Image 1 (cartoon, chains in turn purple, cyan):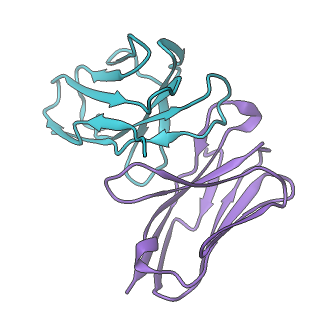
Image 2: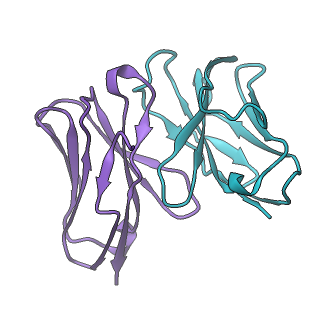
Length: 110
Length: 116
């Protein structure tokens, strides 16, 4: 059983469309991290959310941390082919080891 | 910008052979991690070093896997003998702090292993 459940598993959209991916857990996290991983490469940290209810924006990417600090979402506005990749959320409940979700594979078609 | 270096990037081997992967973390980073990522899944921690000491190897299959970080800088992960199920991406990451699992981790490009 995954500590962090990500949905959907796969997402394929046309360039210019919006998308949202979700990361959910029954555990409380002091922080959650979002990574993007391109094929054949290691994950690259996009953002860390720390405060319940926090919203962070990174250009066309908007990250939200749930009020109860158990879930998070990533919203991409006007997706571009360069946004294609595996989006991973990760968190360390009670400062224990960092656990990753299985990821959402996003494909943006030109 | 400082990066985590890994080599080789790709490795093809036959089952029962020995393989070794190398990682050089970002300079000054005290903590080094080795992860295994199976296709379609998120990374899973194999071993964590704080300086030269192992602080977590609970998920490392110790009958065939070994890891060392002798001088607290670079690290080697070895598999002997390799099995078909070991085919995966092996990722190395490092973080600056010595305590706490929630630290920001910086990942290398990984070594993709294929066992035939």
